[in-house]
Image (cartoon, rainbow, N blue to C red; front, side, top):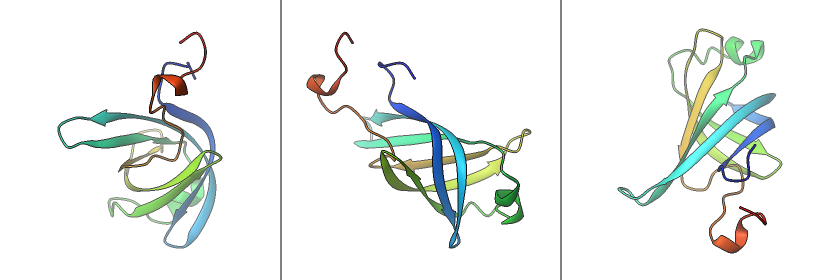
Amino acid sequence: MSADEDGYTGPATLTVDGTSLTVEVTLRGNFEPVDGRYHWYGRIQAHPDLTVLSVGSRRPDAVLRTPLGEATGTLSDPDTWGRYRIAGTSRPPFDVPVSLADLPAGS
């Protein structure tokens, strides 16, 4: 991941309806000045057990935990490749720079 992007790519734990799965995710986000909240979103790589949970079109809430944090988001329908989208607002499950001092050197 480039230093000038907000996000996370890597392993995570997804908990849906009390069942926890180890998954791979790609997450991004941005501050939305219209509503004053941080919106984060991304894809969960295809996972057969996630499909078995019959997530389908229910749009359940799920807890996503990465090594950098934890957040609640909403799952949506899988895409053609079996990847589910997850989205949430407020604190994301990854670090977000909140000041220039938080940016890596050379950014």
